[in-house]
Length: 341
Image 1 (cartoon, rainbow, N blue to C red):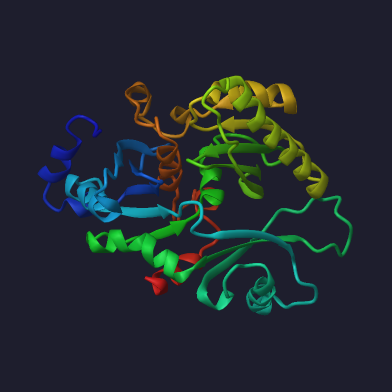
Image 2: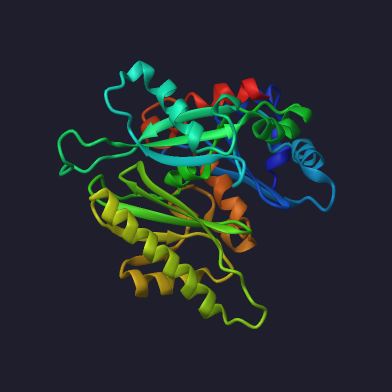
């Protein structure tokens, strides 16, 4: 649903593309939905302009993206595409010892030969260093998060956009995007975000604005007669165990808060996590991130999990003082994706 009058204002102006150069559209592709959120630059926070969530209805991704394009949501905007689960691999590994920085990428690519289910030579590939505790033992190898995606998978993901004449400005992954969805917080505490898709949940932990832990977990199979409280308890148990693993492995500050994304039983999940993990658990609320979105919350603009990640993708910023917080450090990833397309 578009904000009232938004399309007419956009197309009524001569040179709309130039006038809308401060706009960014985040896109997330789900199992049977495509979600897009459009924001424009504001004085303090980005300003909400539009959100759309379309079901494929057998038409396929290409036709759905073309429909979005014809409606004008992409006009004059940068487009950031979030890869869906299953289209990429994330692996945390120790930094190879005694490897010069300029040779680290090749060393990691070689190390991934025994980890990835495909040859690293067939992949778009990048990495980011994870924060290390100040109390870490001298000489200890810092952890590195390696991200890889088969080029053919990336080509399939971006093809519907190029077919509709839409240039992809950046390709990102939910692990990095979820950092954009946590407002506030200092540099000396860890916070977590839990999102959902059709088959899995994604838990990320960040220290300040740096990603320091991620784990994707299969959602428990739900029996038709099962009580929602039981489902929530099982999700909370997985989260609690994951947070315990993070605490043991990282020695970083404890997680003080977790934000639970859109889920049919989100309230129950948050309550169960608070009880089992003994941390503050709140539901995702976009009003602190974006201006002009409060009056849209009741209209279901973010009723789907895909829309939440699309918002996170739209919050990605390049350049300016906000870059260190919003831009993914996996800067080289996009160049390799474009080669794949």
